Image (cartoon, rainbow, N blue to C red; front, top):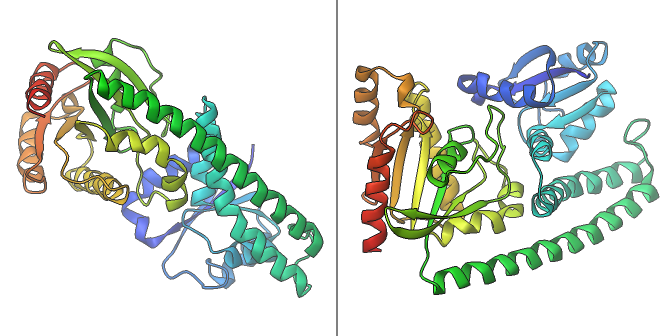
Length: 352
């Protein structure tokens, strides 16, 4: 088991627990955690920290931010340690739950998109003789590796496109047959799959780990007599890297074709975090071209709140929601207000 040091950007200080929970999904032996307020353009971490990391017992340095290729290579050169940035960590977590071929291909595509600039930078360093030891495969080794990865990227894109076309055919047939489409979206660990299971009477895996859902789960259901297809989608997270959004676009596309969205939010968090999670999910939806679609904001886990706190949250959240959104407090696990959710869903579906 690797000993790791975690580098947190100062901008994530209020999300300390969330960022560390991501790290602990893969690594549970955290021996050092420190903040970087102003990243060094060449090494990200402060120069005086590098010798300390070099002489420490850590095997890996986890930087919870996007590293430039130059920064990653320079940290490796100065410390001799393996370096993982936030994007690579998220992809490692994704790999834990990648059950389908599509999910595995999408993860590999995102990893390639992140690695290729690093390999290009390694080639540049190798050309000027500044890359030795760890990562020092030599100029020609890196050039051959880069060419191989580019070919691999092209093959993966084609396979994903084939899967996407097959999904398009199935979706088009469902639409022609008159099915309504309901998409469940939201921040990771908000309870999306729990709600999906309650609405479908299925038993899909749920858990406290982030990103247990990577491939869209679909099921035919009757919403108070209205025949529908319900889709559980991949969870969102703060600053979701664009490589992942692009690689998983075929999966996220299911949301675009829905008649109604259930945006589930974990209401058990502090009010500021509830608003932050809600806003972050909306930003990601905007990035993939989704805006103005009929949406139910399901404030989940209200069984963990007292009445006063719930009233305060509903009052605060009401100031942030758009005209196409309707707020419904629920507890998916305890089945609180699910009858109200289903009633509102039917009203939306029959008028769509």
